[in-house]
Length: 422
Image (cartoon, rainbow, N blue to C red; front, side, top):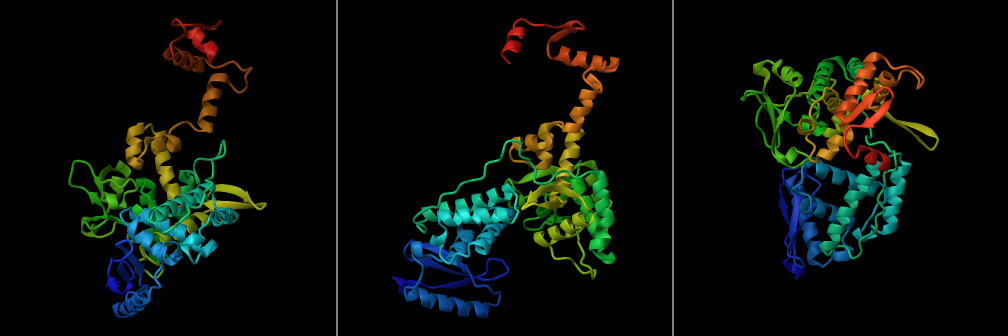
């Protein structure tokens, strides 16, 4: 049946053309990048691949090459996911190739997976990053097994968060640190480009948009774009499912500060991208997530804004502020201003409200310390102020407790029983 195989060149709207044929064993399409945008060159490559396939040298189940599997998986298993999710899988596959250099899919064994995780840690990557790579690799290996491409699924030992481990890989930066980043922009980009980057940093600070989302923000409609909508009573953002992490179309409210920032742009300039970043020579900067993120990371580094630090092989490894730390700062400011939990979830666009609670709701140690000092004084032996006693009385009254200065007695039946069991 191999002589029935025909390889076609197709355009998927990506940088390179693709080649496709239907596998006679599974009756499913198999795709591979032609690694060129030149159609004539792609046709020659397709003809060569077709000849190899017709000679019976195509990869059967457990003989599939890693390169073929990677193309096949991205084209068929995750093609319907958001662009950011596809990029995340590509990042994992890049890491696998860099560390393990597999030639065949079957070379991804339990031992290789263990070595992969070990090398990631030696490179100083956070446990959360190691876990993300392992999750993506595990999902792809299970899918390969279900498709009959891999006989044995390797075992994965997933990292477990140590008790008391930090939730965030960075932290919300302060206003002073943000202003320091703004003042450092000229150290990273030239004068012709500086104002465009300052406007962009302000946009991230006031909007809470993810980096990839901010790069698709437009004044007008375009496929896959987040669009500024001034037509209603309140300014909104229209977010399509393909660029939304939760994969759901939604209307997003925006803060008054971000609305004012957008409205400050003259009406005649409200077309195309909202954030028109410039390169050092004044030409448009490439709208690529990685490249933009690198510039912001360098600004954070030059400003000396350290958001995380740990020891790796006896040496301090510092993480400097990134675009996501601006988003964290946005969420923290809203939480500190008392924005309701469900409203905060909507503004941060968290699919699960537990994510909002885990990262942004609750009082930090400094706030708790100040509250304790107000009630208890500088030391446990100090006499609290009259004002702090009133606060304490109201708190206890709210909890159903009557208090006099001699002690606490139950205000409701059964309270003492509850106290004795807790």
